[in-house]
Length: 264
Ligand SMILES: NC(=O)c1ccc[n+]([C@@H]2O[C@H](COP(=O)([O-])OP(=O)(O)OC[C@H]3O[C@@H](n4cnc5c(N)ncnc54)[C@H](OP(=O)(O)O)[C@@H]3O)[C@@H](O)[C@H]2O)c1
Image 1 (tube, rainbow, N blue to C red):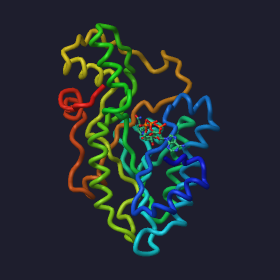
Image 2: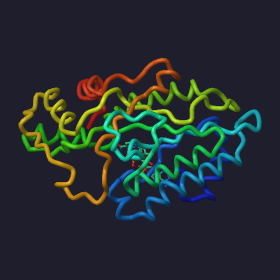
Image 3: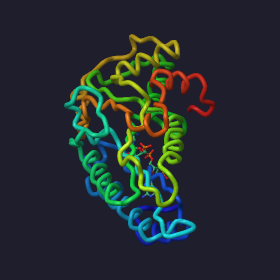
Image 4: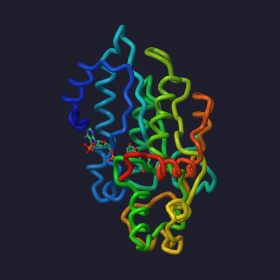
């Protein structure tokens, strides 16, 4: 176990492990908590990333002095959502929340590391952690209504597909010492969906009533943090690097609801 906020401990552990590659998924990803506790957001998202990068810069990969590959898992929330069509890797981030700004700052730190690569997924669902999808399934199965944002579109991303994509990406990014052929790679299931469309698709797939899905605007819930209205992602670089894109979100959702053995 390694608390990345603890710089000394992080340096000790990275120095002992001397990894070839690190996939840095740690974050304070509760968007509203980040808005209310900006110091915690900075510590967990920016300072922790800086600690890891410093430790990696000092540590040597096995067999020589080459630095480890660092894959920094960022977010679609670095965009402001104003584009209205899917964001690609060349689009300029303009975060609109404390969370988004802290993740963008960490992205810039990762770009300052010679073998740093930014990966951006979008709204995650999958086994092992309570998520929007599981909440909807539970409520619909109980015959309870579900409120879903009508004015937020993302690229729902299945964590199992994300993990497979990350593994293929690490292989494609090359071994120790190789400069990464891309610095920003979107890794998300193909397509985009509003929260309402996602919830209605879940209802259809589990035989629940679509009438229980109640569309509401984001503003109606009065959440502390602003969310981008549209942050679907293209995955142009991923296709070039690993020779394929992740399947459409709808197929991934079907797989999660009907195949995943360990779903809550
Ligand atoms: N959730 C989404 O929809 C979404 C969308 C796009 C991008 N992302 C990004 O994807 C990544 C994972 O997000 P998530 O929502 O799955 O977050 P999560 O469930 O909160 O996972 C974060 C992980 O980081 C660990 N962690 C927290 N603080 C740590 C520390 N100081 N030192 C070491 N480890 C620590 C946590 O360990 P414990 O479990 O032990 O606390 C947890 O395993 C994040 O980088 C996030 O920004 C998430």
